[in-house]
Image 1 (cartoon, one colour):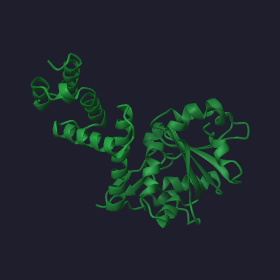
Image 2 (cartoon, rainbow, N blue to C red):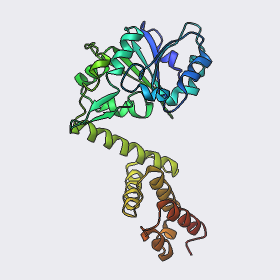
Image 3 (tube, helix red, strand yellow):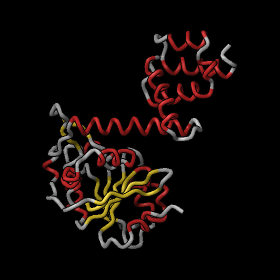
Image 4 (cartoon, rainbow, N blue to C red):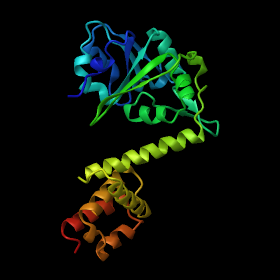
Amino acid sequence: MTMTLKESAEGAGRNLYLLIDGAQVDAPMLIYSYDDCPGFEQLYRQTPHQSALEVSPCLVQPSDTSRLWEQESVWRSAGVAIESDADIQTLADHFRSLISVRLPDQTFAYLRFYAPTQVDDLLSAFTPNECIQFSGPVRKWHYFRPGSGWEALEVGILERRHEAREEGWFQLTDAHIQTISARKKAKFIRTLVNNAGLPLTPENENRIRVLVDQGRRYGFRTEAELASYTEMATCYPEAINQPCAQTILANNGRPAYERLAELDHLVAQGGA
């Protein structure tokens, strides 16, 4: 049986917070639907990002009578949980300093470290010392992974915390970006293997990887387009190689969605 977040964090003796992605859900409505008096900070408030407040990530300290813990299935795909000895204002200030980070070319980019689909890849790209610096007052990160449940990453010795005015202090390197990209690609391949109903083996991962590369050569770029192509190529390998199918695939002048729809109809009819 999969443990709940409260069970996985039980006994820590630290404050347990939620960090909800306001771009995925209406965070204030969700939070106040299940908690009458939470600690609550919209990270974009009183920052240069104030104009986008409606999609701001929100830091929440559930009250003693909060019903959020019983409703984790409602929010766990749109946020992470963290343990910290710090108060909510100190923690919010540190997170505000990470809203954007410097890229290798010294430009700035938003960093969605509060998205459960991204935090694992991000933290895994750091050295232990970088993870400590990035986390500041965070002592432990919790994020939900479909299929395996709650995952956690304990952070080492507490580094100094940063303030909102220091936003952009953290530097993402080429090595970080390459590691994150490689992990995302590997996850995507594993997802496609599972979606195809194949055993998760190195052979099947390589088979799907070949099809993804093939799909890119046909001009399919998004994950949805590549997933659609690999599904058809896996289920109907002979039909995909028929002249009619190849003519459709080679017509890069047509939008991807049109070619995929026509290809789907064709292979379902046997590729004739």
